[in-house]
Image 1 (tube, rainbow, N blue to C red):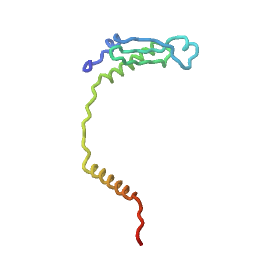
Image 2: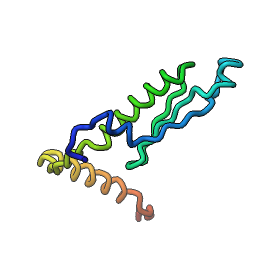
Image 3: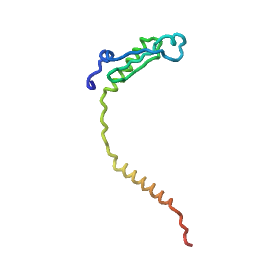
Image 4: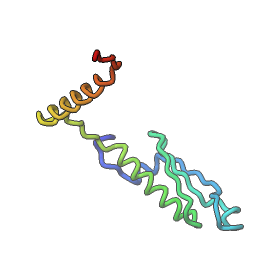
Length: 116
């Protein structure tokens, strides 16, 4: 299925939809009705939820859109990273900085008394 184009109708048939009481402001209407929607794609286990609207239908549509977006992202092939080498001048700068730090650290040794 990784190479196929996602068919929303087929995918939504493979989903389980559940409802919940959404929290937050809204008073009695929001506390008594189950307007929050969770859509779970059973084969992959990916879930999406929506509870922004007061309408269960609108929340369901939003959750389905979010699920389809997550599935598109899940099924797209990731490009392999092409290793590159650092330019010669960059490597030289790194070595120069290391040498400077080394010189600085060598000066931190114990101080010996000079004969006068």
